Image 1 (tube, rainbow, N blue to C red):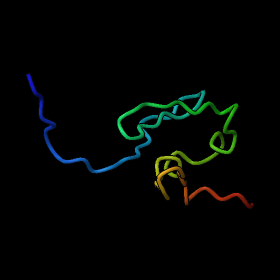
Image 2: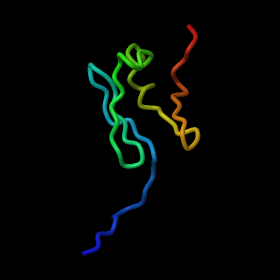
Image 3: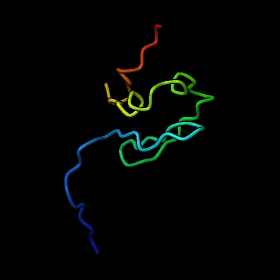
Image 4: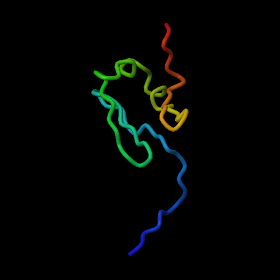
Length: 70
């Protein structure tokens, strides 16, 4: 039996959730969890900024609203 995907593929990257421990990503159909202990710059970021993720290239993710300078 063959199954068809309904709808169109609109994104290779999506932040799906933010928890007290980290963030969940859906990247090309696979789920990943980024722990705050490993990626501390996300911990104090505004949630709206964390959800604004982009794929810069095949192997590079970017969060343009997160600033590295204060």
